[in-house]
Amino acid sequence: MKTIWQRAGKGVLALAAAAAATTAMAVNDLPGGPARNQIDLHPAATKIGAEVQGLHSFMLIVCLVIFIAVFGVMFYSILKHRKSVGHKSANFHESVAVEIAWTIVPFVIVVVMGLAATKTVVAMKDTSNADVTIKATGYQWKWGYDYLKGEGEGIGFLATLDVAQRQMSDAGKPAGDDYLLKVDNPLVVPVDRKIRIITTANDVIHAWMVPAFAVKQDAIPGFVRDTWFRADKTGDFYGQCAELCGKEHAYMPIHVKVVSQADYTKWVEGKKKELAAKADDPTKVWKLEEIVARGEKVYSANCAVCHKPDGKGAGPIKALDGSALVTDADKAKAIDVLLNGRLNGAMPAWKALSDTELAAVISYAKNSWSNKTGQIVQPADIVAARK
Image (tube, rainbow, N blue to C red; front, side):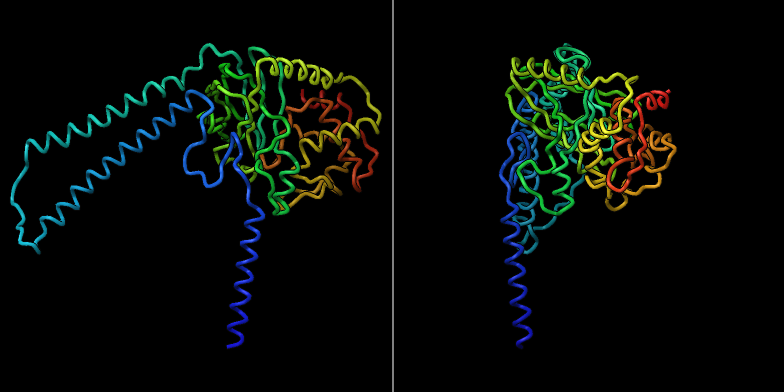
């Protein structure tokens, strides 16, 4: 008996500990993102989003009315005309009136629902006359953004899950209202401007989805699809890849920052200066300590999420520290891996990085942790390998 009570006590303590842990992990609503105990669609930040919410509520009411009417009549008939109270089953064949009624009524309902949805669905597909056109390219597992037309044309960058977020996930200690939604480079757009998003992918099918904008568009390798939105208020809005795209699918968030026109102009000017500063001369010959320092920044922004800051890797992700391929005197092997990827995308291709960035990160890996090779890769080596 004592053993039973001891086990019961331990069970209570375990439940209390679990409850305490749940309380400690409690988060708040995230404006522009998910909310606690959310059962409805995200609050709309676009006119289309508001229309979609209205359609959703309308369809829900129609279905509820049909449900109540059909089952109400059915249960009323079962209870009111049951055999136990003396009713006898009727013996009749088809009724023209009933046949017409149950053909016309559903037809009218479907037509009404279709008419209500058509205007919004057609508007969702009208991507003409956009103020800004942006290409969103899905990679395993990050998004690449290229501003093709409008203010900001020529800007391009990658948006990757914040390293600290991945570390929290690996440690099993989620924290913050934006857990697994924070990125290093959010997509920035101006408020009250029509933004056309062209989607494609580099490896497998992804999907660009931001619920607050009522936008979800597949990104398919070899195909170009498009969608659009016009945010009617400033703020941060979040989404995620909505197509199962591999083991890192959960770590591929979308963060859209909507700002005023004036702030957007300032951002464009600053971003172009930043990109111009990064546009290194591929013919420049770097010193080892300089290119390693540059490579450390590239590694932290792009590689540390999977291979870890200490280069030890995790699970199926191979370690770079002590790697025979990394330390091999033939630098072409490491260059080929970064340019073309490996294992059907498990190690993605990094062609989107500049020649200098690729040379820097390879040099960093070859000369960090226990990999004290003294080897250096120059941007010119990357240029030659791309040909």
